[in-house]
Length: 215
Image (cartoon, rainbow, N blue to C red):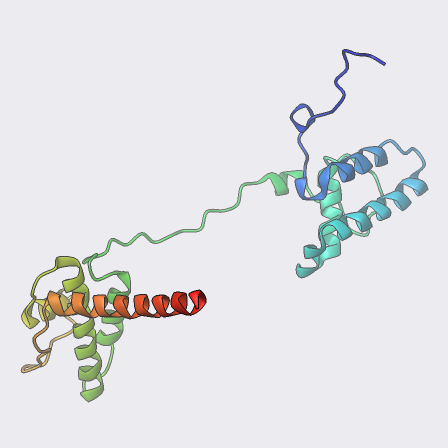
């Protein structure tokens, strides 16, 4: 035995796998397929390798036309150098190597980040509503929620006029708040008290559970 020869073969010294999800043994099977001279035997062994790939990667069944996908994977592992009578044509290497097309993402800057991006969506929805009691009801609830968001971030009092002005600004003037609409007096202290109250309830529930466990 050659003492200078390493006892184990580490992955760092091996060539990279084409499709790691199938493992190195499948890679070796495909490499062996390429050495089989008898075409009939090569075709028979290729079908057997595809079956092994199917067993090793059962989630492939979730894909449409999964058998076609397995044969494509076989050709990829073989680096497109396998000559067999496949039920599907060999895929073009250039097509698989092509970079995916970029998905255009609209990056729209928020007009008022302390309200959040969803608020702008709701404001646009309200602006498109027909005038009437329903729109006024939704608008008042929207303004009340915006006031809570405002107080959460700014930790101060805020007037109804400030909230209404922000609604008109964010809607690009499409929403006109009805005259006489009021939201009532709410301060940051009330919002914090509500949050602390909820947190206290959660702590009490946890303490009761821990007390029962100790008993």
